[in-house]
Length: 408
Image (cartoon, rainbow, N blue to C red; front, side):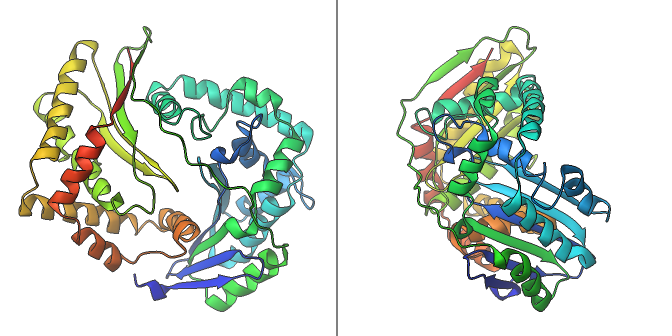
């Protein structure tokens, strides 16, 4: 996938439009907006997520049912999601309906009306979502760990907000958030499908191109440092103990990011041969679920190791994890070990690139953050440059700052 395979067209209002042409009857497209829950101000917690829900509740041109039926009646679909730093509206349609998808995405992003009655109904839906989340400790522990790790910053609160937060939100607060954060300089439209550049340009200029240019003025503030912590929270109704250990990590533009990605994958990635899966599950039968994750953000990131187990096995699990971390810190990978780790990661990366929908979403974020997408060859080259010493150095920095949260 050479960089030239991407056709890029920037509209006069600043929206960047990126196309990858492939032979398929299905087209995937998305608008990635650089606005998420960390952009909420005091009294707005939960508004970015509520906004994402209410984008579909009516525009100046359509009622809510018309928004929902527009693509579904054609066999397609439209959806959205919110993260700490982005909101993404994405659609899947047959290639013949590409322009219809562009028009609908434009309509709900730029012309939603956020009717008060619909906002109130959707708040009840999100309350149900919050209740479901509270019944899912394996999800809840991640969010509570982030809240502690980023305490004192806008990254330190749940994307959903709380029931009390939701009660304070109104249509006017949603509109204020849109005006402040949904700016054309922070938008990337990406598409993958059997679409010619000419047809692509015609559609994006006709719909997105007529919107007024806007520019974001607010700057994000990097989270302040927090002290290491070791917290236990009592959940006597749970059959298992769940635990996370982790720390702040490198940002998207850090030179150490790839070394940490490799280390995370080697330690507890999706492979059944990952070190923690082998030692905790295969050899010792201590857990069904153990994983290591690294989430890079624009100015920081988070590394974590999660596991669940019976109450009497927690300390044994921790000792094994600590042993594996010590190995990464003090024992450089052999040439063969490093080659296997790199091949495994690149294989996973190449296979994931075959999923056009997921790849399209990645393209949107990559252009938003970097203004480009690395080809497979470029990723190979960068991974090839990671040395055993790089991984040891990253492991030492990570281990020195680990905190823990445990549901007991």
